[in-house]
Image (cartoon, rainbow, N blue to C red; front, side):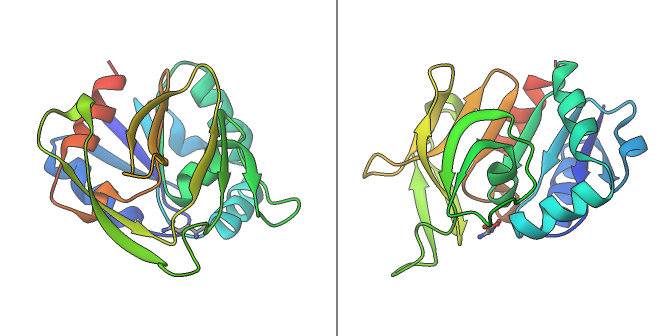
Length: 191
Ligand code: GLN
């Protein structure tokens, strides 16, 4: 099994290492041809405006949409989730994005008092043990479409992990912990 990690910018190395620990062959994706033969793709955290611009420059946006259109799963963490969202609130006007998932996200919305924080999330899809989630200048999911399933929310009800068929998005960074359950969950979607 080969799983790609978009490696233009941001925290891609941690995803690569996690995939390798799980016995999957990680592939750093920098050009459209790197998508060939992959079973899935992860878009890491970072800076969504920069990553979107780089992806556009390398001609990767449409190939990634086609990749998803062919039924292969895509997971975005944090900035990756922003790039997947159909609607970006507080984004930079004209910010290039994939617009694949029926959610609206607001960038840096936790900002103000708490830029970054950690929380133990109840994630029924992953079992009983809470998932320790690291949020770094995270986006907030403000709207989810009818076909989108909420996998986890904060105590105040804010959705932070969502799934729409073979699309997965998390506002936080599972690759920065030792907990492999979200990565395993994603790998299940490749089957
Ligand atoms: N604030 C970043 C953005 O808007 C996302 C932060 C992250 O990926 N950790 O793109």
